[in-house]
Structure formats: structure tokens, C-alpha cells
Image (cartoon, rainbow over all chains, first blue to last red):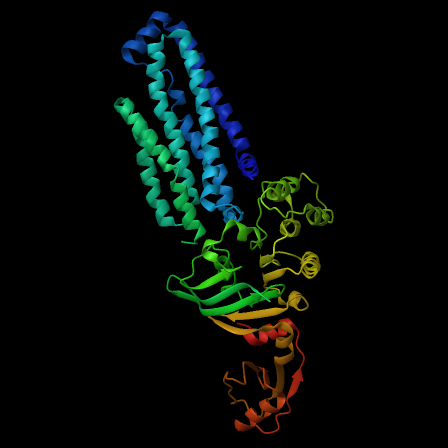
Length: 220
Length: 295
């Protein structure tokens, strides 16, 4: 039963996921080529100096990749469900409704997590070619909130798409934009704040249950 | 016979707009029940309430004794649901969708599904999105038959279908329902197709129930009478005898559950003597239009 549900979600997501994976790999490759270029053009000493002393952001091409992935996966997964009220088919399946929605959103979450872990690993390797672990950790500390933003935006976009009440959608959109914006304020990211944002992001996964409840009860 | 569906004092509003008030009906096990009404009278609203996709303003719907507002997974497995427009997962192929649903239903029988698919000009790996409306309707029907539910709820199965596909749909459904003693709850806007299909009917108009009885009883008791007017200033009212009427120039058509003699007596009381009333036979569609009116 659960395998069947995963199969359905995979059918919807697979092409978009493949495209996002490809785009992410291209972005990482671009960053790697840029690093090679800076190393050559600025010389290793100059590149080091720019990064360590001036905080030169050689990785900015990756900044919005997780958010883009989160939005796209949420759209391809949940828009076909709400189009023509197809979610009724899913909610009519002989399974507890909240369990169904949580399984759907967990599947998207796991796929995004795998993609972001892969990107983190690749980033680690390419930065490690030129820099010591201190720089790797410094960049990953900036990259980590961007990745969590990707997960949060996935949860929030899913809830907005499933939500049948327009006024609720209109309230959720600015809230989502404001929440996501916090992840890109890189100068205030303490470990505690990152942990707090992670917990809030995971909590936002349950918003789809409220939207699902409104859909199920025909509240418009 | 047990009641598969019970609707008690159902009232529903969309905002301030009353859809229906104190709506009552029940569907007995093994019966084919038709909910008939013009567009916008609340047929799909009723089906949505029955399936728990809408909370009624007041009243109660029971399906297999359970409140439709909180159906258990076990009860849901006993109900086959065709959404208006034969909506299904269009991103799946014929094989994929059968495989998907089969794992949710313990009584799943793939034979009727593939038997129906063999009649269509489609390939097993063709996506539903690339099929015609008629073909998609057969996929949706095949899936419901394979589910082998005790109750089939079909919301306007005829939407978008040509005569051939409508006939194929009903032939299959009829054979299945009779062979397996299934209960069917159907709505349709093409009334003529249902003439030899339904056991019971409920005809609704805006906010009210017009008829609730076995279809044979309705067809035998509800009559159409025609006569010519003696003068153009004649006026009729709807009442316990005259359920509906039409006046076109000097031609009058009266729809009634009363016998011809009662109509004659009523017209006499209005001062019309010897009106030469003719009883005209009706199809189910004529009767439906007769009771609901053309507008």
C-alpha cells in the first residue's frame, strides 16, 4: 500500500527531480570551474586572500538552487492533485487521511534531502581541493540555511497549493516569503538560530494537514 | 433490506444561498438509485457530502451506518467513487493505475478492468492524459468494477460521453450490478439513458424534493394531459392536482399524478366544461421535464 503511494508520487516528481538534480550538478560544476579560474587568474595566494580576508562569495550560484528545487517539487507533486480536485481520489483511498498526506510530503522531503546532501558532499569535495577545513565549514554554515530554506519552502508551497481557501492562501504567501527571507540573512546565522529555523521548518510540514483538512471538508 | 445510505434532515447552504433544506432519503441494499435534477440543484453537493468531502450545514448522512463525515478506511474500501468528469490520475498509464489501486483494495479483481480495456483502442502503456474522454470513462469504470465495492457512487457518469460510450458504460454497469447484487447511486443529466436502468429515483428541484419513489411507479402514475383552451385568458396554478403545466397559445399541457377524471373535475371547477383531454404517453425524460419544468 505504501509502496503504491510512493510509486504514484514518484511518477509525478521524477522528471522535475531529474531536471533539478541536473541543474544542481551544473551549478556545482560552474562553481568548481570558477574556483579553478580564480585560482589561476588571481593566483592561489590572491584567491586565498580574497576568500579568507574579504569573504569572497565564490559559491553564490548555489544560493537559490534549494529554494527553486523546493518550489518545483511541491508544484509537480501537489498541483496535479488539486487540479480537477484529484486529491479526492487520494483521500478516498482506504487509508487514514492525515497519514496519506504525511506520507506524500515525507516522500518529497526525503528526495529533497537526498539532493541537498549530495550537493553538500560535492561542495565539501570541491572546496577541499583549494581550502582547509575552516573554509569548508565556513561555506557550509552559509549553505546549510539555504538548504533548510529549500525544505521549508517545499512544505509551505505544498500547503499553499493544497489549501482551498483563497484568503488563507493569501495570508500564507507573505508569511512564507518572510520566513524564507530569514534563511538568506547570512550575517545572523548562529548555530542556535539555524537549529531553531530547522525545527520551525520541520514543524511547517504539518501545515499541509490543515490545508488537507479544509480541502476534505469542502471549506472554501 | 438494510439501508446502505441514509440521509436525514440534510440542509446545506453555500454562504447565504440555500442549496436544499430537510432533505431525506435512503438507499436500500441491492437497489439502483438515481438522483435526478437540473443543473445547480445540488446533486454533486449531495455526493460530496455523502463521501465526506463537504460538511453539511445541518443533518446527517450515514453510509453503511457510519457518519459520512468520518468514514473509516474499511467503509471507504466498500465504496467505489466516480468523480464527475471521470477524473483519474492522468499521469498514469493503464497498467500503472491498475497496479496502483490493486494494493489498496483486498477484494481487487483485475479481470473486469482488463476486459473493458481490451474493448478500447489503447495500448497498455498509454497515459490516461492521452486518451479521449470516452476512453477515460471506461478506465474509471473498470477501476471501480475491479475494486468490487458494495456501493458504487457515480457522479454524472454521462458527462462528455457520446451515445456509444454511454451505452457501453451502462451495459457493463447493469450486468455487474445485477450479477453481484451491488447498490448503485447515480446522477446524470441525460435522463433518457436511465429509463431501464434505475430501480428508484429521487427528483430534486432548487431547494426541494419533487419525487421520491420507485421509477416504475413514477412512470406509471405521473401523466401528461393535453387539451385546447376555450379562451386565451385561462390561468392555472400548481397544486395537489396540477404538478406542472405549460400553456402555448391555445394548447395546454398539464402534468399530474391524478387520473383523467380528476383533471376533468378540476377543470370543470374552473369553469372549463368538456375540455377533450388527451392523455399522452411519456418517456422518462418527458416525465422529468414535466415535473421539473423546462426552465
